[in-house]
Every structure is written in structure tokens, then in C-alpha cells.
Length: 341
Image 1 (cartoon, rainbow, N blue to C red):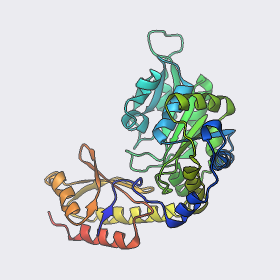
Image 2: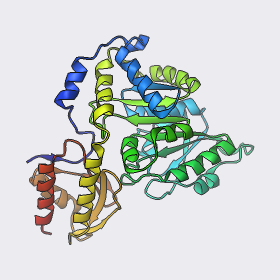
Image 3: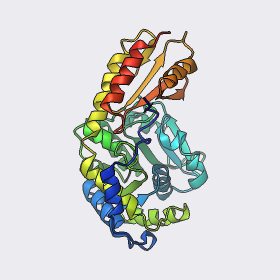
Image 4: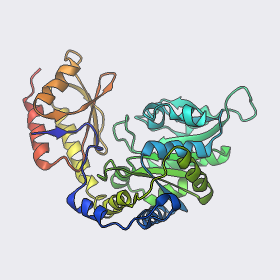
């Protein structure tokens, strides 16, 4: 049996999603004449109670566009030291925007208003970069799918308003956070200046992300997307997948969370496991005992057809997703119990 748990990006479109894609009316989105893209953008903007949304081929491009829209070269961005915008976007913060990052050591990828306040540079001290933007991530990738307490986000927003800073959300897995907590999309829309959301992770689409904000920011984002090469033509086929996923797949994320929680509980009982970080959504980060060769552990799983991923510094990651079936789950749980080290 093959079980791929390296990421929730490995999913394949369902037959019904493919049918929705095939049936989509399309046009040239560079001319803003693709009706399916236009409908998706309107739906997502309305869902978050924000003025405008823009479809992107990737979450990285959406995040990088937001950063460029909010900053000028030489500015500073505040984020957690685990942030995707810092670790996994190819140095785009500096390459695309000429911006430096002030990294904070938060709690599993979540920073506090007190930490942000300490990190803001005095605006009249010209020796240091101008602090311009705070970027949060929810759920946190390297933090093991942890979710922010929305009150903490509101505290950070109040601080940003006090210091005239923009606030961006990397919401690649925000759909997971929305299912796991009581906050609503409109709650987020009232707090953040821009939000990126991804359709190709938990929602199971083949491609696609979206950036949401006010009209002025999104007008700038359209031009930046063009500069970055993100203008696409008959992209309605991809937008149709996202529209289908929003209608049919959001509640199913709870099944991914349930399986992840069951894996957490099992791993905590296994003698070869050193520790397991608390599981909130669909990501499990754990470590094996220091006496065990990490690669030997991964190889032992691969021999059984099971793939997980290394995060470095002794951390291993499992990500549950919609293509991870109940049968695969039972098989993986059995293999974990049978492994001997």
C-alpha cells in the first residue's frame, strides 16, 4: 500500500472536481474576461467581507505580492522565525521587495503583541530600517499546524494601528484554522489588511491561491502580479476547482484533523518516539529517540510504502489530507505499532 503523508499538497482532484473544471466557462483572465475566475474572486472577497480578491498560481506569489504592495525597499517586515515567507519562499522578501525580516521566536510560529512592540524600530531613527509590515501565519507550518487565539491577533492589530503598520496574513492553511476554531472569515477580514489563502493544500485543488484586500491594495497587487509573471489566460478551469472545493471540501477538513489527533495519541505511546508537539489541525511534528538513526526510521517506513518528511534539527513531519483514506490510516497506525528499534 502506498501512503504519502509528506504534505497536503499531494492530493489529486476528485472526479466531481474534474467534472466541474471541465464544465467551467472560461475567458482570458489577463483581460479580466474569465467569468469563472471573476465569480471566484467575488465569492472569496464576500466570504471575508473584504473589497477585492485576486487569483494567483501559488501562495508564495500571493504572499510576495502582498509584501511588495505594503513596503518599499529598505523597509523591515516583522514575522516569526518559523514563517513561510522567510523560510520557504526562496528569499523573495529581499529579492522582490528589498525588505529585511525581523525574526521573532514565538510559540510554535505564533508571535504576541508584546514581541511585536519590542521589535518595532523608532520611525525617526534613520540608522535602522523602517518597520512597515507585520506578517502572521495561521495555521503555522513549521509550528505543527498550530492556530492563533484570535484575541492575540486583535491585540497585534491594535498595535499595528497605533504604529501605522500594515498587517498581512499568510493563510495558506487558514481553512484548517477556521474549522478548528470559532473565528469566522469575516473576523479575519476585519483585522487584516491583506490575506492570502491556498486552495491546493487542505481543499485538494491542483493549483491556486488568492490574495484579498481593499481596492487600492489589490489594484497595486494586480500590477505586481503582472511583473512577477502571474497573469494567466483561461485559468477558469483552475478557478472552477477552487469554487467546487469551497462548496464541498471545507467541512471535510475535520476528518483530516481527527486522523492527525489519532496519530498524535499513538505516537505518544510508542517507545521509540522522543516527543510529539501538540496537534491542533492536520500537521504532526515529532522526534524519535536520539539513539535512533532518523534516516533509518524514514527508510523503514518507505519500505512499507509510507512517506513522511524531515524538517531538520531532529524534527519529522506527517500531514494528513483528503486523499489519506481510512484504510491507509489503519495501515499506517498498524505499521507504527509494529516498528521495532
